[in-house]
Image (cartoon, rainbow, N blue to C red; front, side):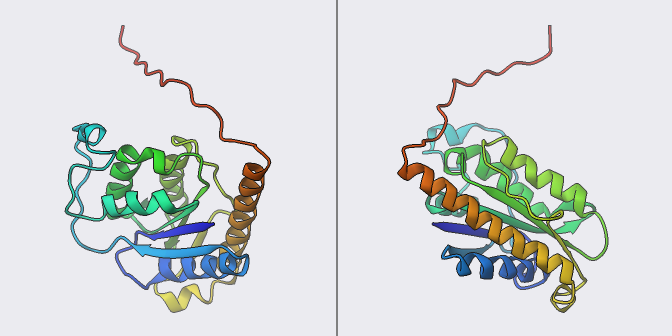
Length: 208
């Protein structure tokens, strides 16, 4: 079992990374393999809705940033933690641009795999950003992993996060809950409890 922890913050080893490391320790303690993947701070394209991914092996046609790297890594992962700093009460522009493309082009690599979002902020805006990231899971048939409170840590720098005792506990609980759910899914597979059968997609609009 492997969990991919995606760091969507602009600083590689700042507050978000510190929170992800706390989760990683619990996952490792539970025997779950992990990888922390930083999306970086280079320019990233947003989705242009071209639909080219449908004829491009379910990969984005733009191959000059990390979106396809994430799609490829997602194929080998069993669960996901997506982390971001909070910018104007929203996740980073980088993680939103990457997830828009990765979930659209590589949806099958995420479907039915547990996911969770975590946020780091100095003071406020985390719950609004939390809502944005969770919607990627709920549109993709992904079980959403929860903790004992909303998944957030506070601090202006990594050292501050280490002082956020409640926030760190929330991260540890999240790691334990993710490991528990992954083990339940694995046990289900061994007992022939398979993924739900998908219906053909129905798309409607409200223009008459």
